[in-house]
Length: 254
Ligand code: NI
Image 1 (cartoon, rainbow, N blue to C red):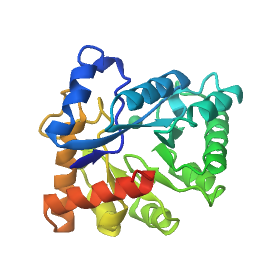
Image 2: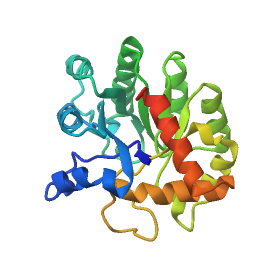
Image 3: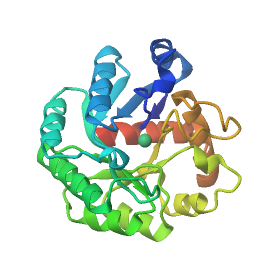
Image 4: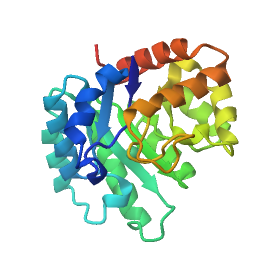
């Protein structure tokens, strides 16, 4: 079975067929999904989906692109939501310096630190988004040496990957590794043991080749596993089994 460790089924692009799609995942070979929130509201939706479906788990967090109005009171909301049984991580949190209209960097960093502190307090792993903010991301996560995490849709250098691996972190791989122009991903995969790889879709975004342009969903995570298997010289079945075990270990799903 496949474990899609990162999908956003709270997204409005699933409004028309969310229930049918989620219900159909196990028979399509997807046995587990983690849905991270990107706001307090979507975190609440993630928790509701996890209550409803045995194969769905939730993470709660505020994405850096959505922290314009961040106030410490939102941490209280997240702390309350995190008490739910099927909340397995704090995420999606991090830094995004790509879009000029994003919240100011100091505010992003404040929200990121506050949520890392919450993860430490609750002893939960974190799901981290880092876009064009590699240096600051690494520096800030180092301030929380007891917090384990996954660098979602990893886009940094092989050197930074090795730093994170040394700290006990996992790396998340997504649809873009299947694109013809993926240059860094094979170098990162080369330095990453299969036991530290998580497969993700980031659905509805980042659809793998040859379905680029279509809406992404968890069934396409198979294509990510196949590409990693090819790079690591093992069978797709073996990679599926390893990443399944990795996800369960990382999120503490027994
Ligand atoms: Ni995401």
